[in-house]
Length: 255
Image (cartoon, rainbow, N blue to C red; front, side, top):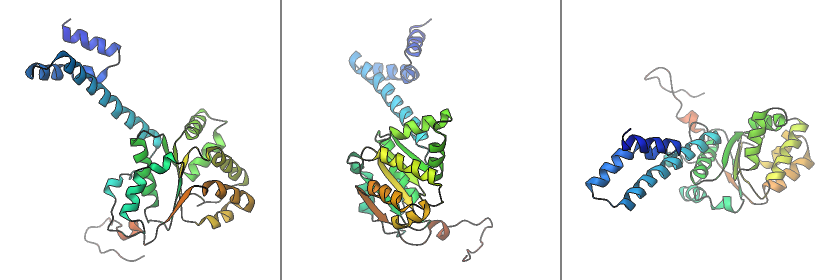
């Protein structure tokens, strides 16, 4: 066994994947530049650290369960929806998470609510926060099943330990009284220790119509709105404005 093979085997035993992969190239570069032993060790360590950071980000991004579009660096500011570039940039700084602030993105379908929420969720993941994206429908399912299935129990545990929870399409569909109570209990438990981003096409006043319980709705809003920025998005649907056709050269028609 050569020295290189021996070191690679030792790297394998210590789970130093990147160091093993880049061993020969880094050593060759060090010999060419007459790098000191200390600098060589530093270079190998940096390869391993950067690799682990990338894998950790990849893992946490998968756990966040983001929709397909979430890169706010590609945000189209030519489309006017009431959110200014400076406001979005300020939100992306994420200082509000440290202050346990909530954000409500409210507006018609297609105005960018989900995209913005998912983008902020990804920004949070990139900066090391535990952040998760869920639709209201999926969240209700987890709350129903958390005491029944292991999968739901694991998801619920992650939610309870999160720094940021995105709830997409809240109050879009009616919920049962039991589900409403479970949802309130969750929000109550997360209050002032986990930030929320909520997307909705209904104003908070309309939530009572969905929950069918004015007292519960008032208590729920009291906790969500205590520290909260409500952002009202306006305009026409981006998806409908730039919708795709199957047939080439076909003119878009109004629906």
